Amino acid sequence: MADPTHEELADQLIYELSQFEIDCSHTQADLLIRDLELVLEKNKVVNLTRIEALRDAVTLHLVDSLVPLGTKTFKPSEGLRFLDIGTGAGFPGIPLVIMTGMEGLLIDSVGKKVTAVNEFIYELSLTSCKAEAIRAEVLAQRVPGSFDYVFARAVAQSNVIIEYAAPLLKLGGSLILEKANLSESELQNANYASQICGLQRLSRDSLELPRGLGHREILTYQKVAKPHIKLPRANGMAKNHPLVPKSNLCNVNTLK
Image 1 (cartoon, rainbow, N blue to C red):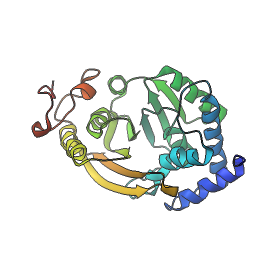
Image 2 (tube, one colour):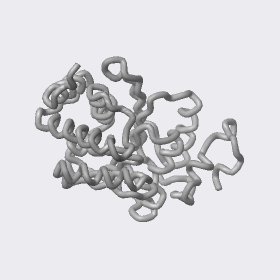
Image 3 (tube, one colour):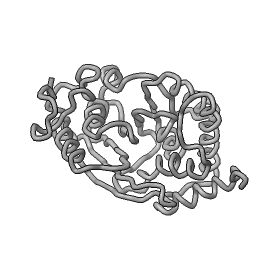
């Protein structure tokens, strides 16, 4: 069977997004599919994704990146600034810039990925975003309280991302976490970390991706207060000594 054309993929994208009441213009769809094509072409020389089937990539990269637009708590507008932690191949950062007009900073610890993402940004003529190879803790020291939104898609445990995001968010800003599976223990740890870090959970949205390609949980937290501990902690502390309730404690030095 022949691969679907660019136009067929754009039509698929528009239709699948409409299932979540997300409006996508043909101009936006064209740009989003072009981004996907750039990713899959670069993937031949740089390991960016394991998803190579075109129709699946539309759903699992583009639609999956954009489903937060269908939630009631995400209210993007031009002029707002967001951070994408662990952007990988540029998801969800590049699709969010295309669909919302927000200004985006996309960060990842892998330099080759960041170089590739900046190439995509250049090829797509996107002027309101850039990618940078930097740790979230280092960025929080450099530009604390700078972002209206922080996004993290399948990056790490929720309590770890909450700690990363808290010092980077403006007061009143929101963290949007997208998870494939969410255990009760992870949710408990996230709620505990959010209390320490000055965040409050606004919503939890559950959804199914089109064509049976997976379950998603979207958690939205708002920064409502200053953290109860000094943030950011030293590099690696959030991951290696995460904030967890004592009942879930695997090591006793979580607050070092």
